[in-house]
Amino acid sequence: MTRAATVERKTNETDIHVAINLAGSGTYNVQTGIGFFNHMLTQTIRHGFLDAEIISSGDIHVDCHHLVEDTGIVLGQAFAKALGSKDGAHRYGSAIVPMEDALALCAVDLSGRPYLFFDCHFTLHKLGDLDTEMIEEFFRAFCLNAGVNLHIKMLAGKNNHHMAEAIFKAFGQAIEQAVTVDPRIVGARSTKGIL
Image (cartoon, rainbow, N blue to C red; front, side, top):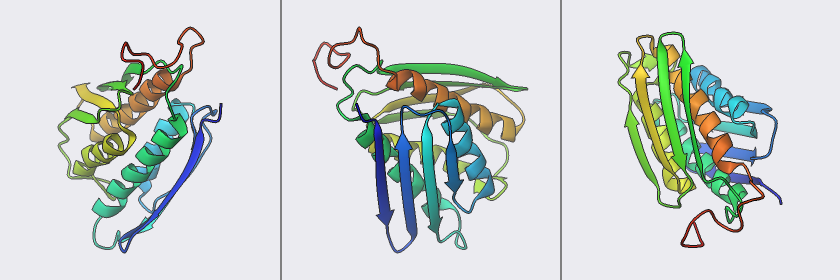
């Protein structure tokens, strides 16, 4: 079963290329022009055992909003395309990840019904060149385009870098669990017979 996809999206504001393999080993090539965003995306890829290439460019001379949101859009589209019918997939995944003072919870359901619950209150407006408010917008864009239900909750934390990194690591681990194929699951893991 092929669990890989490539999606490209070009607008007047951004140019995004994403290639993803859900059955990877954690290799990555991430170039967004926003150093801290690169750092976060590589955490998700590495901890999610994905293989991914994410090349994004855009109007970051304005601010980071368009590029971060559009990267979430294209990553979500590529994820959905690579996942396909979801037959045999665990469907659910969750992780609680500590990083020093920070403790992040992430739970995902590949339900086909997009929803984001995000409960993390950063005390800084920026981490490097990434606006912290854009972390929630990135995940919202991903959910809407991937068709997943995602809950993210910061259980503890003072250091904003640690908080963000714990979130992206937990997201990767939850995704890895959810997409894992189990031979005991015939078709979709749902009484409806479809996800």
